[in-house]
Amino acid sequence: MGRAPCCDKKGLKKGPWTSEEDEKLVDYISKNGHGSWRSLPKLAGLLRCGKSCRLRWTNYLRPDIKRGPFTPEEEKLVIQLHAILGNRWAAIASQLQGRTDNEIKNLWNTHLKKRLLQMGIDPQTHEHASIVNVSSSTRLPSSPSMHHMAQWESARLEAEARLSKESMLLRPTTVQKSDTDYFLRLWNSEVGETFRVLKNEERTVKMDSQSPISSSVTKCGSMLGMATEFGLGQVGSLDAGIKKDHDPEPKIIKSYTDDVQPGSDSASSNELEDSSESALQLLFDFPGNNDMSFLNHDFFSLW
DNA sequence: AATCTGACCAACCGCGTGCAT
DNA sequence: TATGCACGCGGTTGGTCAGAT
Image 1 (cartoon, rainbow, N blue to C red):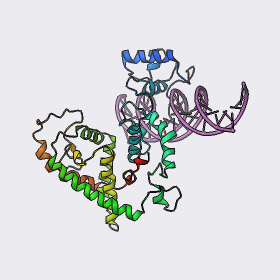
Image 2 (image 1 turned 180 degrees about the vertical axis):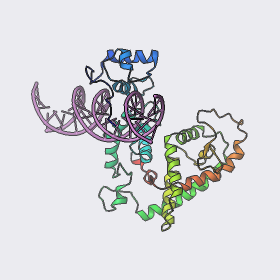
Image 3 (image 1 turned 60 degrees about the horizontal axis):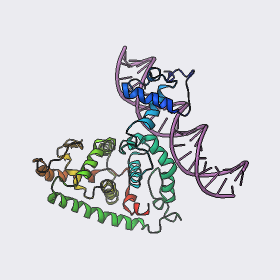
Image 4 (image 1 turned 30 degrees about the horizontal axis):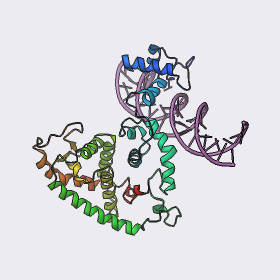
């Protein structure tokens, strides 16, 4: 089918917006909402197409836009999310409050991509160059051999998983609320959806039995790495939000927007113990499609 | 002072998708 | 089911500015 132009382009203005146009757009939307973008320009008295108005609003005029340079934490988060989501800028932007997809896309293309390349990391695959070519001169000076990396990673993950389980038994449910909330938010979001989709895909694909150790290391590394790098010092904090059942889609039992009342969540402590196994299983089951193990190797100490 | 170059970022373009008919 | 429309998204472009030559 033929595609109709987004609007009648005759007589419509293009290029940078003037302050008068901005004022008109903001004024109209604040009074009426944007409604149909297609009809908005006419109603607001603007000689622009609806698409242009929408872009101007979402990328610049929206009141919740956060201006100013990205913080190192935001940059880290963008890289981590890019490792998971790829060039899905809108999905990444949804995890950074007040940042637009356009802004993040620009940040990536102008700063982060180059910085990763300088560090010897492929910005598309997020794999370290030394993994592809160990003899590469761009390799990090302290980068261990693959063998040692695998050994170290294996030992670390084992210890991490054990500590996580232990900590779950000791920790009250209300601690680390922000971490939990953050992960729950991620889990509820498109990022979480990506994980769930990948996990389901994994179920349908027969596991390659030739290298069980390396595959399990990769799996653990990806998910645990994600959990820890997202600020979850203990993976266990994820458990509180995941209901144990046999549903392939783990249920989030507490919305991230809910306030946790100390001592009020009577079901959670029992459920916590019950769920820790399944949650850990979830972590270990996670497919290794997105190997982010580089994130764990003092990656950000080089930042 | 003039010119060049690269970085930055706002805006545009075209495609994919969801929804209504 | 097929078609048309509106919207959102990601890739790309082009203008502006600052620093280098």
